[in-house]
Length: 354
Ligand SMILES: [Cu+2]
Image 1 (cartoon, rainbow, N blue to C red):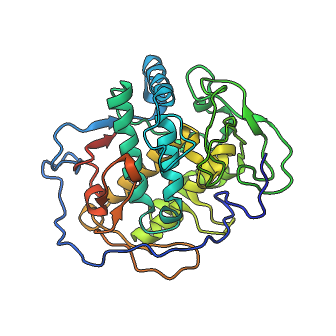
Image 2: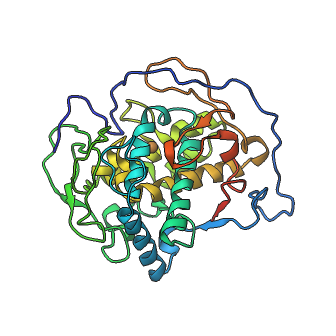
């Protein structure tokens, strides 16, 4: 396993060099949409028949199998972005590469949630249009798993994503290894046991074949996915406070948040800040984070449907605050869109949570 002198793992991130990214400064006139018919669903707008996203365990065995097949299809289709990601082999790699390219601009910033909302939606569109998946992107409600993390059905070798990696001694932090884990090496069972991850670790975009690794750390879910920890995050009154509690704080191992806990609890490839979309579970984890944001928005929809705040750059760089005009850039995967366009999942994104 590659060892680097500074950590790019989610929980301990060293400062990265900054280059200015333009941040729009104009603001839009905001018209909040309401719950016209009183059914608790605010997700109308331009979207009349939203794609329904369900929790992984709510899918039938056949649907689970179909989803895994669709992911494997993404791993079999040829890459389209070898210009920007030289090591990309498959469509699945296009998305992992897109995340690597954006990493510096999308974590520990105000646009963290909008960017990942858009990214998962673009992935959802790809697995539906290119790989025959017919439902919404499934999510992983890990609050069901905090009492027995290794026992979660999500790791099932036949109806899930396979389990922990083999044990590897990890005395110091590396890109994909945090001390105290129970795995750290290649996963050995399930549908992705023998896949090849082509790019990464960290920000490497060159071809570097390696296995999918995991490294369970139950202590993170046990701390951050409890009802009281979830309530502490969900009850925060401002977007910036909510986002920081959900995402976790930069360089602060005592505040890794629900986002950091899903990445750190799974470990291995998933704890790599840049390359974590090399594990298909990335999209289920971020689906859950997006669902929680949507729930938070709906707790006070008039105030929160278009509430956005926070810095546009992380690390130690002073930066303008994010606005609804800030453009979300996913490279060649899809057009750039302003944050405004993704604030309502029932607008142009057109999906809903069940
Ligand atoms: Cu990310």
